[in-house]
Image (tube, rainbow, N blue to C red; front, side, top):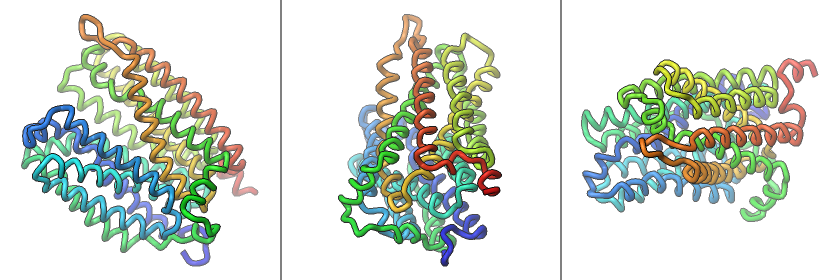
Length: 416
């Protein structure tokens, strides 16, 4: 990086290319296992409950990685950490594709979760360290687009490759992608050590407790939990709701998710660009209002034509991605740079906690009637909307605590 605090424009472009690919890779690794359930249960002779351990194991690995990263990740060059994490994810995913027993497959999924969960945190830390404030939200949105694209492609890719070859093919392909990502990271990522100049000579434990002593960090972690609680209350039951309440045919579900996912991919970069031009706090409020409207609308629909369902699904996913992108940009901007890696690692754990709470909360509200329709899903929508409202209140407070620059439009900052 030379003597400059931020990356040059050429380095920013190269870094973004690597980050988008890496975030796409790790999210694809997470999503691809879900459509492989029938084949995995047949191949290993496991029950649906045992299959669910594969998904839960990935999340458990991510939680563990978040705690470990919160202790030590800020002590090293960001580039080295990312390359090592990609190597670990690639190796764990390769073992998934060559597993010969369920315990081996489960252990490799936990390991993949550890490396993959930490990748999102280090990627966002690189964005925050390498991009100036007036380009940070745009960069965050582009990285989020990689994650959204993986969610769109993960299910069809897993199903297509498994049908063409077998269940091992998706894992082996992702491992091959991982090798490409390692080479790209070594070749294109610049060394990133600017955060090391702010080190205070603390032990790992002192660094963690020092980070948590700052009230802005505690508020940001709380904001993450509330945001995840709002965002993930609805998705687990959407497919069931579409089929049984809105009478969407099973064969039409891919259309709903593909269109919605496409709008989510486009929403991240667009929202980031708007946040950089007009202020992150202002765009966060707008995105939250749209998300609240989308949440309450889609969960209270009567039986409507497919095109209306598709439009509402696209509205929901685009607005939620916009809110999430802006929230991440605000959070990474308000965190003390010398604690940024630690914070974002611990933030991964808080994301998993929020997602778990969201699933349990929605599950305690939703039921079924005699005709098989979901009941209480409208209440879940209102609860999610309230959560989004609380999250944006916390985000606005972070804008104040983190300095007015976070909420200030680009044109005002340049004038100053």
